[in-house]
Image 1 (cartoon, rainbow, N blue to C red):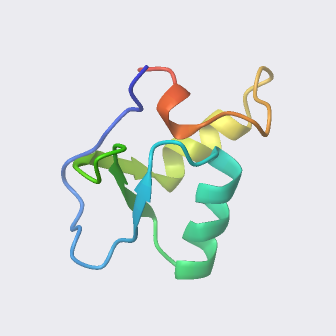
Image 2 (spheres, rainbow, N blue to C red):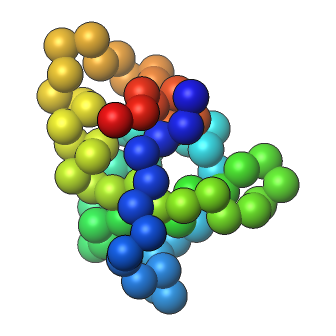
Length: 77
């Protein structure tokens, strides 16, 4: 599945991450970099969109969430 992507944020200073990163690691990276979004890249380092802090926070609060969920496995919607 493909994560919900947003195209309206500026990507000039957003860290680039691979889609095999876990949600927990992505949230930690966002906190450390003090950003609200990350540029999501595939295995070929091609940008596939953005993943937002708001989206990951909602997902993490879901009752079915585990700390092993990878960004590439995020449900659409």
